[in-house]
Image (tube, rainbow, N blue to C red; front, side):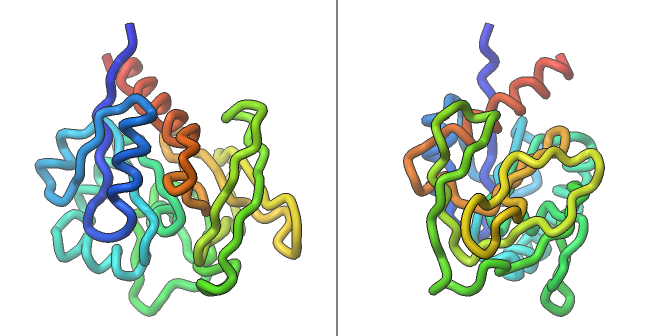
Length: 206
């Protein structure tokens, strides 16, 4: 029997609509999350790309910061893309003054690591967990992981250019992060992988 998961997209800022569509096409029920009651109703959560400092301020304005931290600590599966990677990091290499994260993942992340908007680029990445075909990764003011703890599984590194070897996708138990934006390419394999993580979490709890 296939379990249908309900996955929320944190909808305070960022590319929410694209993630909703990618999740639906990846086989999950998708909904927006702006309130604590909506957070409590989902089986997993996507923290989208956007502006991490703005997102940090808004989750506090919406009184979601502590509920989010509590659910992440309790094992809620969460996928963070780009700014979402920053939000899930335990440590920031160059956070803005007063910037806070939700934490949960034993990684050190550098914001805007590849440069500003003009330095955005695309690259093919080979991610074993997604099958043989490479993933076309779109990097827009993207972060990277500078340090990963011993329980963090590195899924992808930059394969070409001056940033070769930098970590751009990782997983730690129920937490998944990418520096890039899979929601904009029409390739929904990352979202299907996350939906599988959510369904496996549901099976373990049942």
